[in-house]
Length: 134
Image (cartoon, rainbow, N blue to C red; front, side, top):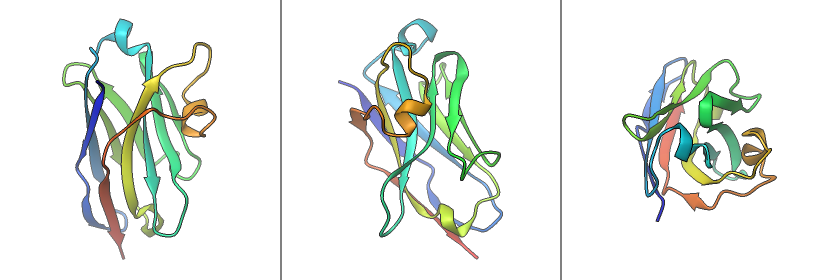
């Protein structure tokens, strides 16, 4: 069974940085196996719908939403079995609960299809709160 556990959320001020980490278990990391899966970060702010922030597939094929492009970076650490989200220049509008999610990849479709919701994620973590204050 695939399990995803988020960590790293907290309270920061605008302009500061924060790094979220998603510990992945239930399947083996490594380019051959992880190539079957896509992992992503999603967020949901109070009163708003959940949105895809950043997604990654094997060989560092990444997608970032326009709202975070240039500020957030998603990366995969095969040695630690984690998918990290480095968030820089945080804004108040980044305040949300951030969720790590994953699924088996559909052949021929890049990470943008999963972040945008064309293909729904099957596995979800419980979330971690990021609160950005001015």
